[in-house]
Length: 361
Ligand code: SF4
Ligand code: SF4
Image 1: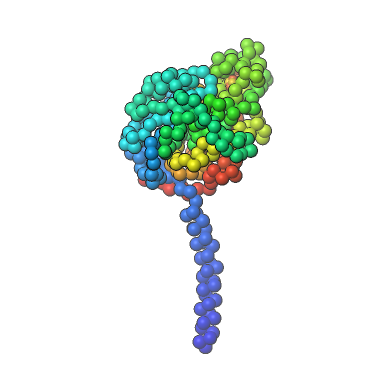
Image 2 (image 1 turned 180 degrees about the vertical axis):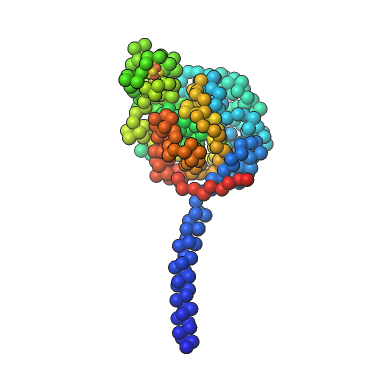
């Protein structure tokens, strides 16, 4: 009898393990996913709370990477939102000069634009003021990445990104802020190379807006894009009110551009201490580098924070689409799907597209 009881007990254990095992495994797997902290409320207090949840321990001088907004852009994140956090951390705002003309193409005017736009409450440092340097990297597209020499002065970086649309990449968040934001002008050029837009003449009404927006004069008076001059910035794509200009299709060069962004993001972060916050507000179809960008096409979504830039951008993308009620609202608004950047970033080991959303209340 005792023998039978023992076997029954064993059998019960096996059944229990079979029943609870997969659940326990699923729970353990979910727990191992990178956390993305989310606050629906957008306020200085919630921003500080999101940062606190990251448990980030800066070492050395802290650089806070933001986008100051091009002259004439109204969508960049409000500097007052970051004030308490950044002054409390004694952070320095860091940026790099743009590849093209405008109000942020050299350090003097770039700093003046930053101050004019309200970022002057903390020091502002343009990282390529003293030139650029090449960092070794091993990828499909690059064997080095170019960054501003000034990056070496910093021990840690807090990357605060405005999550919004982009005419060349579909959307821009942490990955793009890393790649284009830390990439020096030579780095930006390397990422944009091979990215040419085309004008669909059946839709074009010859309004001339794209000619005025092109920062390098690559569009002629008879609406032909000179590939030798074009730097692939995507400003014409964003600016055309009739959606008559398309970037290269996502299956070819558009995908390569997004993969390049992922590689650069990996290259600039290698060996450094980085943490990330995305602000899902003022979500327009165009980048903050565009003067006169269109008004937001939807309401604000919230603040997201994570130590994993891929998980952070994926969660931002998911939440924006959920709020908009369509699977890829950026593709709808810009004609470009930015998903390839996320896929490729995960493939090369920059982070995880799976995440655990933790709401801050
Ligand atoms: S902005 Fe668009 S519609 Fe206007 S000229 Fe350029 S391509 Fe044509
Ligand atoms: S992408 Fe468009 S705006 Fe940018 S340089 Fe080329 S033609 Fe000009």
